Image (cartoon, rainbow, N blue to C red; front, top):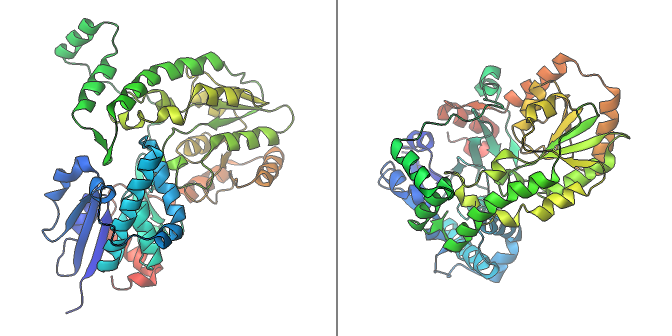
Length: 454
């Protein structure tokens, strides 16, 4: 009988666990999960599998497998994990302490456990149960792949070692599936029960969402396994009401009759602008764009709408550190750049896209929205974007790329078929939400000789 293949799963995913649950062929050795999903996940795992929480990793106190040589070897990984911990507002000394503990944990795990495949169902965002095992797997030449949502309706498959999306051939979703995103639609709001309405009346000027969030936060003092002082959340809630007012004092209404490029700011801190990109400072991109604009053009910059709605359920984990990533000073710095204007949050982004000469961003769904509106896009991170090879997508890695792209933009009239080719290119990297793990593994085994056992 052939030896079982051992699978390490980073972040629980029902389809992946179900697929590898055939214990005659595979052995799931461990699943890494966030602390608040621990009990839910444990009941669905094979009895032989281990389940690690973030806190099991970062509060590890077994330093038998720790050394200075190890730290030097994994400096780039430390940068990624430090960014993750900064998102949670960990102090400098605390960040290093947690990282070193996690480094020792995973060094021991990979030294004592045979692994044939590492799979993840989230994009890399610097977590100690993501970036560190990625690095150890790469060191041991173990295949690592990530299946994660790259759009509201689809998944993509990432070769982690190369940081490249994989073309999916006949496994890819249909164009219709990719385009089914509910762009520019406001979320539906369910009418509150009478008791909530009564509470809202009673507390008057006190913000209801803020109050509920603060009370809820008292019930758990950790976020992604990291212990966070409660006062940092309180400050974050207060800041979430101050920041949009400060932004709107600086912003103005755009003049759509002018020639301009629209830059859509990313939510920060977030994975798309964190550890997965070469340059995560959006000021740099905007300075480069503004400097390279054709004469007479402007750069209109608008904040991501979620940046000012972090006091809602599901986003509160940003609150403890958001003031370190976006501030009044950040917006004033943007507004002081020649040819740059901040656009009021009340202005419709759809109108900005449709009247622009092009839209620019690091990555994100706004590039798809723009292509659908028959407008070119500037993508500052080709590797992690669905838009790679389409004729209406300009990949920007340097100031020289911008100069070349603007020259082409001014001299080229793109046809409807050009935009269709760009969308087709994006579709080739998209799995449907109801993808088959069997199809995925067959594709990977054809691509990667290390998976010829499948």
